[in-house]
Figure 1 (cartoon, one colour):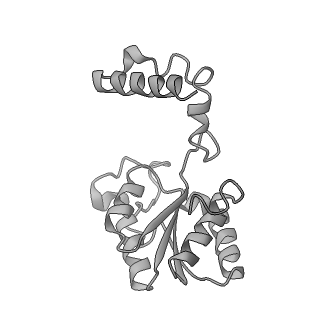
Figure 2 (cartoon, helix red, strand yellow; figure 1 turned 90 degrees about the horizontal axis):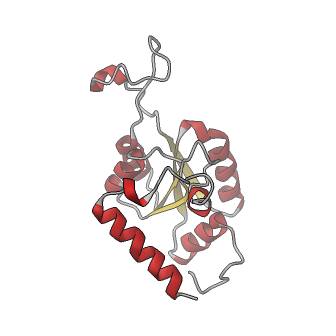
Length: 175
């Protein structure tokens, strides 16, 4: 995929091309409720491009947080708030017969569970980042501004310091 049309397609276009190359006709979208508008747009785009589309929202099943013993982990205390159910999302999309799953903005941890339980291959065109407009790498591009002092090497573990040093060496030697 990388060599074909390199640098000419947006990530969602690449995802559709990947699906076509893998003969995947039935696509599933596992999305965060906070990105429901974006998920609706993606469903329309995929359908307009000839794909059959199924979707599963993170709050599927509407299981109360208290069921898992995390009743105090709510955005608004005292209100009903269903917990996210990424395993249920994977099961829903499998039952729908999807051949490729697309993850759209699931929370950290929920995305890992979805990946672990999905039997279909998974593409991740957008990761959730509430601070940076779902553009998580922006923090990496702005390490001299946004993360100055937040991610200093002295705060990292020895393994993290070694990783940062190796990455810096790689960048220095690539030019």
